[in-house]
Length: 300
Length: 226
Image (cartoon, rainbow over all chains, first blue to last red; front, side, top):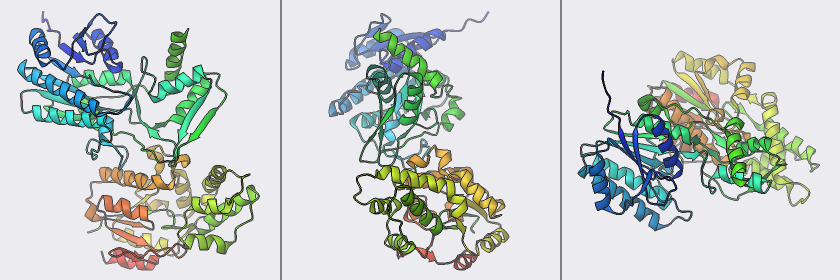
């Protein structure tokens, strides 16, 4: 009888939106998963451990002998500030140094689609110019470059440029939770119409993001960068129309914004080809219904 | 050697003036605005005014009329009546025949027309068989609601980018024939050689180092010399 050793995985930012969903998903898939988080979590399986402490994180990695480190941890403050840049880069650098020290073999970094900045063509592929426009997106790009720099060590790197994520448990300031929130609490749906029309966006469901991370664990590449998105376009207006049909909201109010917006859709053919990634969930009434119901349940 | 020619659709393959005129005429009629004359629209266009600027001018200071509704109505009119009022430019069939003898592929690239409209127009005019590919905003998820002028460069660049991925032809083996600044900008982005087709009812924009032609006969000669 052959006994396979379970793969040991560390997830940083485990109490965050993607992190908490990933933990559940990996636990179901027979991995030995540990989660750490800088912030407090009610989940007893998540260890509070700050990535600012290089010593502690190095000790922790040495003690656990992980096969994979999945780095999701990052500050996403509401107001863009230089602190985000400092925090996100310093913590990543500490983690990477600790990984070299502990001889970690595989590192998966959750980057962001925001590293591209203004789109020059659609769908945006991994060769598109990189022009981050916020401290947060700049921190993501710097961290990608740290990974590249550290790939000279014996670590395989997979960088996932994740598009706008949605799903259960997301904080309210993002597009879909904001629409759901106002739909239920205020019985109104307000969508922005820019000078160049409704913004074209590419939303990816958190379950698809989790599956892309699992697939990245099987990657044999020394260094790879992949867009993780649905590859399908949608506008806030279309989402509002779905929500209107699902709720008692009377109408959709269109708020005109006197500036142009940036449209984005991502080319996911590289992730499909090399990681075998295939997004399964596409925004529809059927997908939004449980999100709406969960929000109502939380209220009651 | 040139292996692929990319044509812009509106005002390059087609003569859009009648459609343009009718769209303003019927939209004004719908909103009870004084009907513009042919000369007035021609003057606006020759002065380089875009459709939204002309709409603003026609609506004027009327507080009763919502400019956005006017623009949207006109866009719907364009969608519904393009095939009816668009005209094929003279000598274009001969040009396509000539291009075929040179074994060059022909592609259409449009940032503001739906694929079905273009296909219908080409079929009615019996030139559909000439095209290897018809690239439109539909494949990017753009609709008439966000095919605004400021999106057109992005749409054109995206379509060209997808084309370059699909056809394994180097940009030096292609030519882009277009009439507008957005065509020029998109071609320049990918370093695709550009031929500007000058329209007789649009402002003459003389630009240095741009190959400009005024008729299909001239375009045929230029392509023949490539």
